[in-house]
Length: 233
Image (cartoon, rainbow, N blue to C red):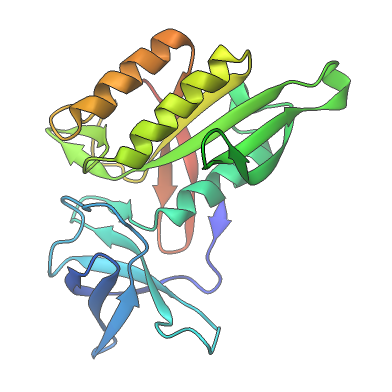
């Protein structure tokens, strides 16, 4: 569980623009915050929504505030995609994910064709011959017809990752794709085939070829953020 010390500050979203910028009303003033989300953020950036931001203590940062969460009236939605890897690492440390216990790991390791895997897991010595597990993490924020879906826009990068994970399995290693659902107002999970049919097809093919797929839902508030429960996909 990632604990925010101090807790995130709450404000109101005025607008998100140029992908990485968001104007926010905070304590009666208008501030521009960094929006660390390259996706479309469909249904996650409506003007007037409540938001939660963090503030950096780094005096060299041009934009001290970072948009972390938005609230749609039903649920907080985590829009800082960088948090997904952090809370997954916390879960690995705590042994929360049964399928991924018994490993040590490295972050952002090069593999394939100019790619980086989020986590390269190595089996612990007591488990005998060392084995590798390539773990890729995806942040899910899209809700459509009550169901969580990924991606929220065409993702050539995501398509490439699936092909790379297929090669990992073909080479005799383990590959796991972990979807982190960053909201709690829906049910179930599927690929967003209407948005990116190529990704949906590759995801289905990858599963048949042995790429494991896990879906976990995050519990998030302005005080804390962490994985809560596994969902059926």
